Length: 231
Image (cartoon, rainbow, N blue to C red; front, top):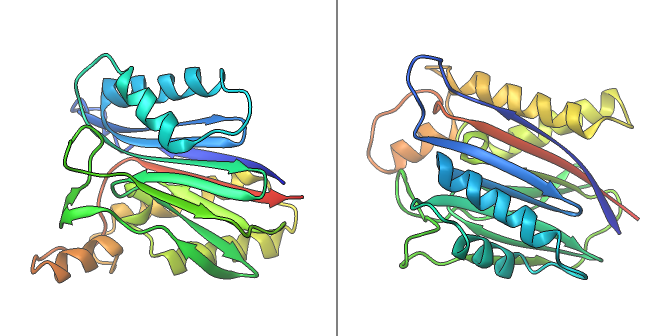
């Protein structure tokens, strides 16, 4: 099997204040990497992932890739991170923190990755010795399956069922859509929701569950990746 994908990044930077944290993502063949954290740290992490992955002959182990990339990072810092790779008929992923992905089949959510966090607003971080990586293997992929991955900026602002409905709507409009166009539509909806002060969002739901008061979305960078599984 193979995977064709598209991506979209939208920055929350307002042009006034320098950002201390950002999203970075990179695609290497049938593998993509998403990270959010200290600006220089995540840039180095993504660059290291690309450099190491391009040297690998054969299947990529995402846990090994992330660990090796982290060890080669020269600057101090921390980040959340998610690496997803297609190894023949198996989707192999590693995740730490509140990035994530969902798998759609026949217009239904077949799988969604769990959020890793200690408490509200405290996700696991690469660089924290007490936080462990989550390995995910989905071994029964089928042609036609769809993967939507993203940073916390996506999943803080759109519920997974909303992402699913948005994707279905776009595919029904165009049965052979551009992955980049669908990724852009998902990211656009997430960034619009992030500045909505009144909508009920995953972030406001998490705040309520933690006994906090928060209305609307959560401003921040948004990265969205959309991928088809093909024979």
